[in-house]
Length: 347
Image (tube, rainbow, N blue to C red; front, top):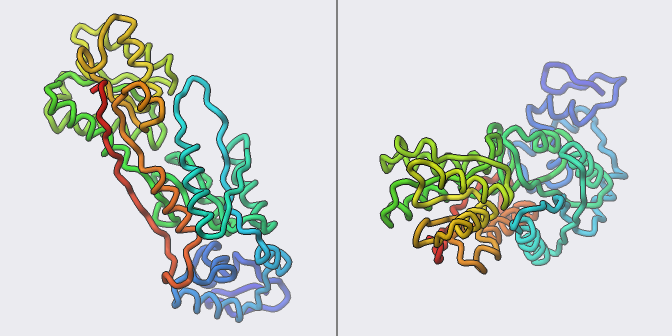
């Protein structure tokens, strides 16, 4: 059946689709899917409106697919990213471990898969959901203009994201770390220690995380009245130890080199420490260095770093995906967590 403009009066002869129901009810396709498969996630008034339109249109979902989902083994899908060479980061490892622990508490497990790119990931997530292999999926490493949230929402796939896009964040559930607050806290600590020329080792522009960490450095330097004398101390490169070493060497060659450096990652921070050693300088005593992510490498070599609350991120995302009916309407949830500065010998 099709619909007319009177909010869903059926016209015989054509089978109604989930898109017809969504349009007639004035909601998204994912909301219709939630009404059918996870009604506890939808506000009662919205659920009643959608159910009324479903009845009016005579919409019949794919019962085979729904029965497969009902017999799902309790899996949450997540793409595992390729190993990055030249990096000391292990953030996704910690995140997946946190997801797995939180999932076990809710009688679910994490199903890992690979994909060449975000298009392939979206297709794989949709296929897993439609086959009934997963109860929902987790999106990781969200870009500012990331197409995955929109694609999964259009396909009716339940998901939650670690990170957020530049726009449209009200339409889906996410948990994120306040990266700008982290680098800002690092600058505040260094200023309190007496530093005035504080450099920044960052990523090229265009990533949610990298841009936020650069913004935190910029904002804090401006707040302390140090930006005008530090405009040439902001250098960028890909996230490798070799680039951290190269960029730090460039800063040290400036006529007025920095006395401290804030790195966007521990990988760049480790590279910065190597540049100091190459010149016979002592980290912490001659030039202070602060990294970001608090990786095991940072702890092992005494690199001060900003610790992401990854375990809490994993727990909150899994809780969102497994939220029980007793917790209410299940609208999108948004949580922004602050990192913690861990001070070691390098700063």
